[in-house]
Length: 305
View 1 (cartoon, helix red, strand yellow):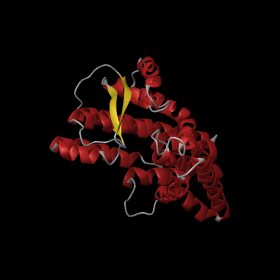
View 2 (cartoon, helix red, strand yellow; view 1 turned 90 degrees about the vertical axis):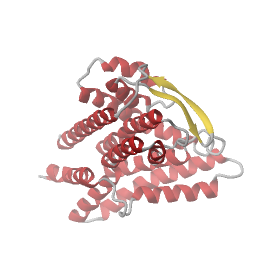
View 3 (cartoon, one colour; view 1 turned 90 degrees about the horizontal axis):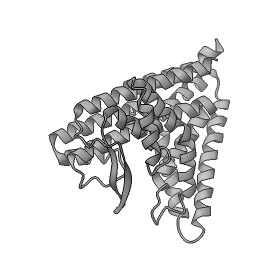
């Protein structure tokens, strides 16, 4: 009976994400994470010893998140513990919101290129002002694949390993990387540990994501494609889910991107430079959902063992 009760917060949280995504009106822990990181960066990222300052900020926030979450949940009585756990898990899952955003990008770019550029800017960190319609669609699908790992599979992986505190700490690591994990002049020293920690935290989840995507497609021969292109990405992790989706869609990802006014060249993943369309988006979303379901089933099974 206790094992069944232990999996109910995850089932409730996942159900809420499937139904609602991230409601814009709801207080969200990641927003709080962002404010803490922004404040810390503003105070510490100046003068000398920026690497040490950034390392200190990263460790304090990540370890502090784990300890505080564990402490709060330990102090809560049974039913309240269950509800708060479900709420925190819900906040860590981003599958439905991401799918909605990608759908909106394809609908927007079908109406006009300018609308598509503005819509895709909501989910990517690169400069979108000069993207072509093909590049807008490509950026959306790359983000869909990468964030299946970051926003669904990785949180569930760390939940299975370290419970809700581990899941929350992972989200802190991921938020740190998205805010200060860049290799430009401002962040290359200060955000160094945050970026490396994110690489470590996503190493296994990214590869699990690619495997689940291939399983979801039913195209077993794509494993060779994924291992060929997955390690050619600038990131040690993002290339694997992106390669899986590029192989499934038989298209090409990668190429030049612009971040903070600087061009960053990312190796091509795949070789078929064909035009992407709404059908590709629909297939990609179906693959995402199937991979997500498989991961949830795996985590539930492990929880019951």
